[in-house]
Image (cartoon, rainbow over all chains, first blue to last red; front, side, top):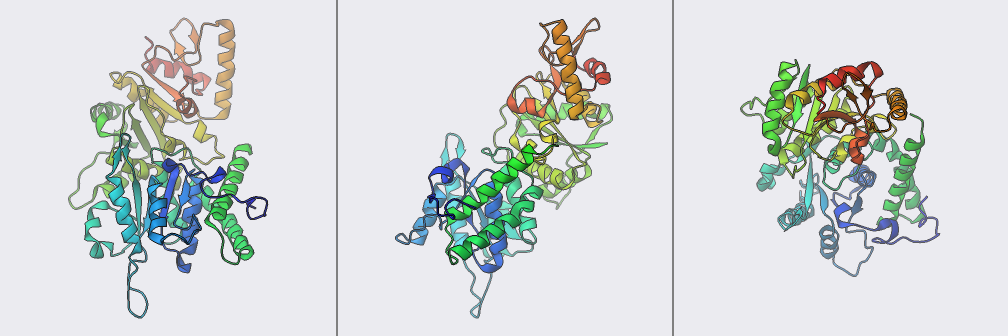
Length: 226
Length: 218
């Protein structure tokens, strides 16, 4: 159980275990809606298990700043970002699509062209469900070959992990099979936190819960006789 | 036996020579037929799927090469899905072992710390590099904990007899010892490559002579 959740002490984003080194930070630009929740959680957990820090507009917990400012703050202090365009299609009675995600993808893409001595400042992964018509509404993305997937966590975790594993800042990480094996523990801990906090779980607590489960996995695997 | 060879544009010349040498030894390397209408990522995936051995060539100054990165991703995903594929890293000169190689194996597995890595100190020795790669591909080099321990034990015995000897493989016909210094091509463990040390790889005792013959002492 995360210490914060146990009421022992609260970790704040950017401090202690939640220190966010930009070279190890991954901004997550994915749908928050209930039908994507399991997949979203799997992405967060996979990012932590790869040794990176998931970042989000939710991390500051403040409402005294506009949402776009919070997004930019988190994204601009992350070297990496993950974007999922699943929800860019007509929905509801008016058949409107949500376009926040392409907007944020555009910001990340522009940031890639701001280079440092070590290379581009930003690198991004674009995820789309198979047979998605993204090229029809954003044809400029046609040359980028986004990563396509079918299904939920089982499909998306390997795609996220293989991308992170081949980044210049990656360390050795577990296999997707090991991460997916631990995912139910994270989901159970998240459910417990939601009950405790009446569905107002902070981003910090989610990340701390992921870190704790991942550390237990590493300890158990490395100490077990092979 | 078919292999897939991943390399960066910086190592294209060495890769072409290596492909020829491997073919002479019976290990054919998949080459991109550039089928019309088929995108590069799909062609690479097809090549990786058809190969039993996945050779990953890494140079000391490899920068960001999009095509190489694409092959790394496909190689890693393939090994995750099919552990029967043999992943063989080939490090040129003092190139470091990229962490993704170790990420191919479960944390609990010995394999991640103990897979054979072919080190090519002198890229001119491409024929010897090919021989070492073929030996690894044929499974002629042990990757077992038992093999490692036996070899450590033998190394200790030999060091006791001759403290000047290092820890590696050498067979000059008159005395057998251990030490990679002086070899242009050798096989080290992934743990050694990862740590940047010259620790040796577990080779079964009956294979030491066979391996040493394929490696040229200076």
